Length: 149
Image (tube, rainbow, N blue to C red; front, side, top):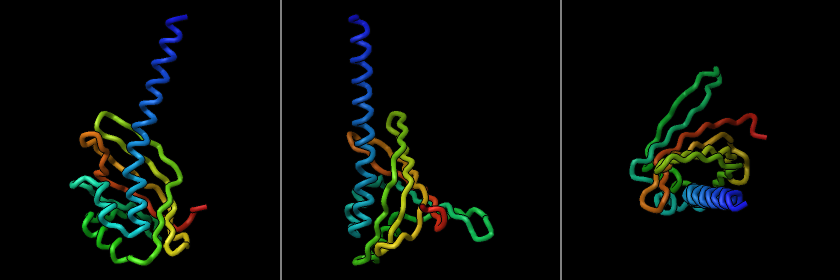
């Protein structure tokens, strides 16, 4: 009986720790989205590592895959230029995997611009643990206009 109670305690402790770590990983991602919505480049910049990369994978009308990359500084300029516009990227869920100081979060999303659905897709956030904090070190996303319902 004592062994079963000990096993249950260890299982529950591990589950609680994993849940806390998942929430810690979601925090910079949700803050990143909040920064986009409020056009707050300082807030966005607080969530990313200095090495942060940005990639987008899209399909041409002919069905070819295209990979585009952007710098964080250019992305921040684009967000700042949209001051007064309502850009709202809404996460639809999180699937998180962790290995030591690295984590990935698979985050399906819908992007609304001035309250109109603009596109949807999946963001894959790659994060690194710096001290006690998780920082976004890369974002790869897909974007599509169809199949967003």
